[in-house]
Length: 133
Image 1 (cartoon, rainbow, N blue to C red):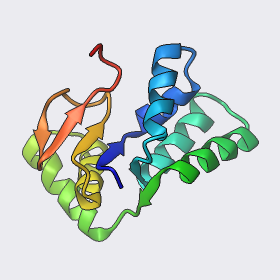
Image 2: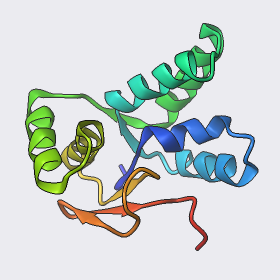
Image 3: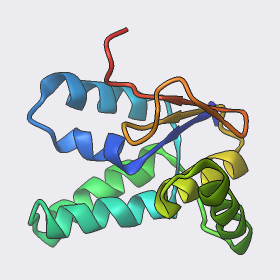
Image 4: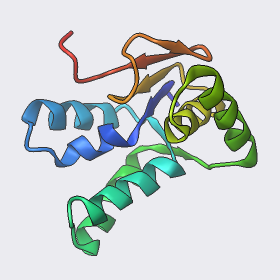
């Protein structure tokens, strides 16, 4: 592991017509990041409901992601930590669960568009990889 954890929104930008965001997401995947099962679930849900993708395309995307990422499970411990994070930091429960999974994986950076760039949570730096450098 290299200490980078990706949120589902980063993975979904692989499908974007925005070349900069798609290329950024692809470059992050080449770094062998960590994701959680929750990320796979969220990507699947968005592909089905919002993007109306057919199952074979969804499977292709998921297989590519699973082949390049380290995947951590959801556990009772990450759930408990997520409830505490959501309460203490006023995050949505799902965002808090991403942070808890990132912490459990040993990540030092969480790549996401959904939280405040530069914020530190539990020793993890929140970074929006799509902002200009």
